[in-house]
Length: 466
Image 1: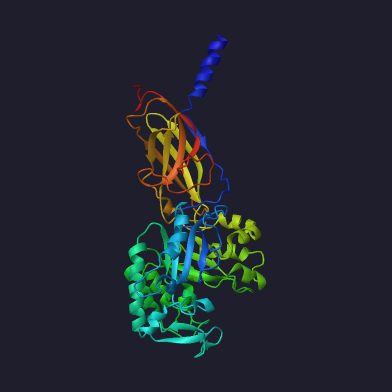
Image 2: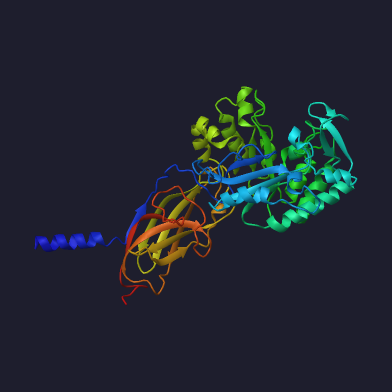
């Protein structure tokens, strides 16, 4: 009698028709759409900072690296009119894309280095485009080694128009591209001429360059530099960029110290709720040498204040990581979005009841959006059932755990589901159950689904034996 009772108890215990969990964030860096670290492979020239990496080396050891950034002069890509050298960017891009990462671009028309005297191809000048020789730090100088176009010159704009058309034929709407800077204006593509000719340009010039990029890249995220507002142009240019759907980037984090480590956080406020803000730090070595970098925590503070989704690795990546590992780890907990399943309860009855709470502990919204899902798998890892919470988009979660969302749902079982024990996985992705967003949990199945336990589906209700 006692043995029979024990068997009955064990039998009831094995039928786990209720699962309640509170998953713990494992602290892992996440690589997700629309966020992450951006590695400067080309940085205005063909040398720094990824150029010396071996062909096989995509710096997989850098946690959270999601985008390789190819910033270089137009002249490298169209050395002769109508003849393009796309291999310059395709070669490094393909390495990272093959690892599931994305690329981003800036095509510049003015550089201050001696090896980029003609960032705009020299044939543009020979075609009649007006421009100015300059010496960095001095301004316009007839004996200067570098040449900068007049950014309003019609010949220059016509040739630039053709180049952007060729680039757009390859990259506009391409899912391999995270974003493209409007980089055709100002020295280094930053929109100002402080380190080149020092010639001022109007807000109309900025708008003209924005419009030219929009003409050719209507399906790609474009980024406007915060320095578009410099040299007396004011907020008109930034408001125009926002109106036209561009995001904001700031290239000047930790260039200065003394309370000026970042200057445009307020400018970012209307952007971040709907667009991924991009931050670029000063060249790490230069910032450190001048005593500005310190412990780097102002970079983390800027990520928080701007609600940034992207942050740059503006140096040799492994050197930067070795000297800033704690900072990188801390930034990875905040940068972009970080979705957590606070708690979940599943009840296997007439239908599958799901009650769960989600929140976002990152500093930015989950802008790509996505729907939570439950997947049941059998003992051979086969997908037995998928249930998607289509009524809830994680994009609606406010950042920094401001307001969690609790959902109570019931799902009918698919007719093919048989009684038995199933592993329970959670994920976030499309309406049809394809997982897209990495979560900070172990027991991942290789397709961004995460096991949280097991549940018994009993015969009866919507489930019957075959």
